[in-house]
Length: 68
Image 1 (cartoon, one colour):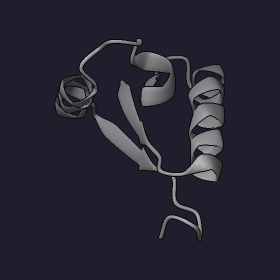
Image 2 (tube, one colour):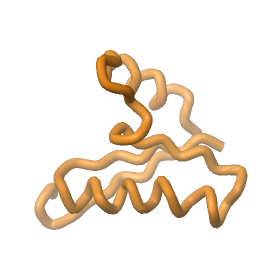
Image 3 (spheres, helix red, strand yellow):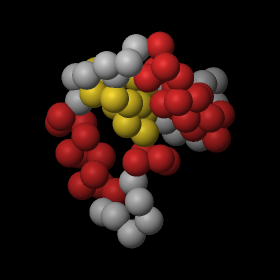
Image 4 (cartoon, helix red, strand yellow):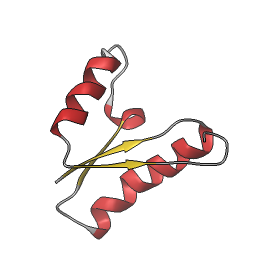
């Protein structure tokens, strides 16, 4: 099951990265995707994000008071 993790801002990014590492340990069938770890330097980021959004089963949006 593919899970898209969205973030915006430093604190939100830290949460997204923590979820990316933690989810597969708790639910082995989950394949999380977060831009900071899954987009390589030089990749077309917009195309990568769009492709992952289309193929993901679920999404997690990391909200903090700063990015509301």
